[in-house]
Image (cartoon, rainbow, N blue to C red; front, side, top):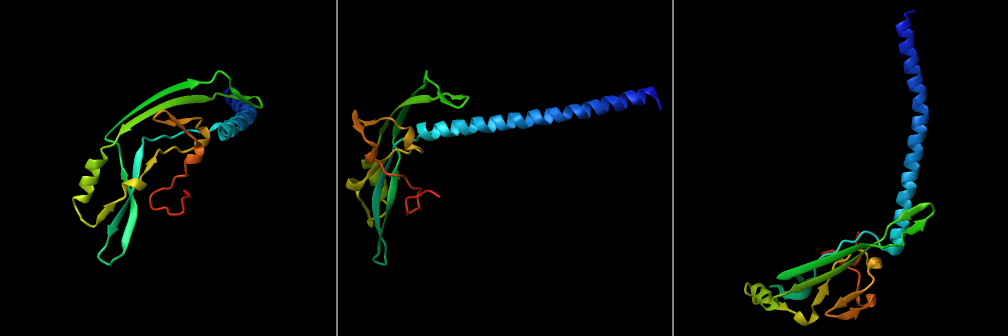
Amino acid sequence: MNPALKKGLAIIGVALLLLIPLAWLHALVSERTALREQAIASVARGWGGRQLLSGPILAIPVTTAAETEHAVTSDWYVLPESMNLDVELTVQAERRKLGVYEVPVYVAKVHVTGQFDLAREVAKLTATSDAIRVHTARGRLILPINDLRGVRKIEMSGTPLTQASFEPGRRPGNRDGVDP
């Protein structure tokens, strides 16, 4: 047998033998990565996970009288004419620990201001039909936040609001109030 061929086969054999501990190491790294992701998810469940915040929206009930004498009431959503969103994001000095894993925790102070021109919007809506009744007194202010556990304090015009004054949201068309 050719000596070069022997050397080539030996190198291939050693390379294949080295793949075994490399596979073990890859499995260990994957397991540790999964454990770290579980630790992050556990801290997020208690602290409040990733937040998605939207600007204020007015939801105003509107009744439309149909020709069949049945009135249909649904929400009419009004967006602000102008909106300003200021966010100050800080990393907490104290990191949350779970086992050997340390998870940084972020705090965002969000200041949202918006202005609605409700009279103009109502005039635009009712200009198309006389069968539309707008119930502005029953209007609600919607501030979409995907996880209220992460909310520490909410103020409206300087007045603190409690979480008891909030209700879970629902997607339009979903009558039971529970997101799928």
